[in-house]
Structures are given as structure tokens and as C-alpha cells.
Length: 329
Image (cartoon, rainbow, N blue to C red; front, side, top):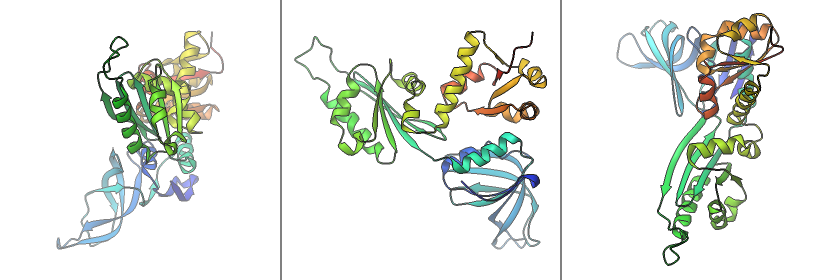
């Protein structure tokens, strides 16, 4: 994302979308009641043709899709010769637009952060005997790519297939998928991942990390991320950072440490006891007053997304958790 012009005091930013990850950030920043101005096409009053012009919308709803962010609202400013009413902007990579909103400190920080974040794509392949699960992990989330499964005989069946053809099939899928990714993580229990690694071409092994996990599938993926595999291949990663924060909270909670969650956090924030607030993206829109209180008291706010296991676990705690400066008696 490129911030072409900003003015915090006026709640203004002129933005150029550079990639899909930018759209993922923007879906959590643009909200109902904001104003967005962009170049678009609109039917003229005579109904005969469309005119290319800039419109300003009062945002009412958004729909995030892979590759674009659809922003819909009522036209608040336009040329005199076009129809008014409702309109939808399709924000996509390469698009420039202007945004006016009452930025919270957290929203302004995330906008600045989005400009400096490097996008990444990491392919995770979780392998065990006769089974492989592939996931693509990006700043914008996790995608389940495919599953490969084949019956491979056990040790008592030496006269049957050894599984070599299955390993070759896994390698073939990794090779095809690795062309568009920055790194590959091979994980899983036992030695199957090493057998696959031995068959990979050098250009793929050069960007491949091997990580031990006790299982495959989503459980194995989450275990690999918790073990730091994503952080090892990507210096700064959103999913890895959020997983680490939730893990630290759960460990403190288990030890009856200086943490709390749910409704009590609001009272604690008012007392200035909240050092760091964790909030899901859904709750962040509902709890702007809480977020503002924490920021005014000098606390930090971290948004946790629910597109990975750690975020879903925080959701089970009401979508709100806090690290405390002290625990009131």
C-alpha cells in the first residue's frame, strides 16, 4: 500500500492499493459512515451513456473478496449530469482512492503499518504416510489448497509398493505450487517429509524449511506455526505474531497471571489497568469506546483475526482479552 497523502488532524488519507494484502488491511479500516472518493463510471441523466468521473460515497457496507474490496454507499458528491443514488466502488490492486474517517489510534497505526508490511506467500505441506495436506499462508489469511491421499502398505508388506510414487506425486504438486511462493515449509511426523524433501529440485529445496509436527492437516499447520516455522521463513508475519500473542495470553491465564478477558476488561480499562488489549476484528468495530479508553491510558491495542486457530480461540473468550499492568484486589 502506498499512502500518497495523509492528514491525521483531518482524518484524511489518499491511498494507492498495490496488492491483495492491502485490501485485506483496508477491510478492517474502512467502515460504515466513512467517506470514500474514487474514479469510476456512472450513467448520465439522459440514460444513454456512462461518464468517467470521481464520486464520493458515504460508506454503508463492504464486501471483501479475494482480489477486490467492494465498497457500497450513497453518493454524496458528483457531477451535475449523472444519476445520484447508490453506487459501488471495486477497490483493486492499482486503484487510487481518498478516505475520510474519524481514525482511532489503532486504525491510524494499522494504516501506517500496512504501508511498510512486505507481502509474503508461504506454502505449507504437511506429510505423513500416504497423506499430504497443502496450505497457502499469506498476510491476508490461510487457504486450503489440496489433499493427497494414497494407501501405502505397512512394514509387513515388503513385497508391495513402498510409497515412492506417492512421494513423487507430492513433489510434483509442490513444484507446481512453489513457483509463486516465497518459501516452502515441509512438516509432519516421522520421516515422510524428509523423503519428499530428498526428491525436490534444488531451486525448491533452497527455499524449503523442514519442521517436525505430531500431526498433519489444520492441526499440524497450527502446530508448525506455533513452533515458529512461519516466523523463521518470514521475518515479520501477521499470523505468526497473532498466534504468539494469543499463546502468551493463554499461558498467563493458566498460571493465574495478570490477564483477564470478556466484559471485565472494560472496567479494568477504565481503571487504567490494561497494558495490552487483544480484540478480534469483529469486536473491534463494536468496541471503539474500549479501544479508545485503552489508548488514552497509554495501552497498546492488537487486532487478532479469526482466520486461524489462535483467533478462533480468542473468539471463545468473547473476542476480548487483556494483559494487565496490575490485578485489582
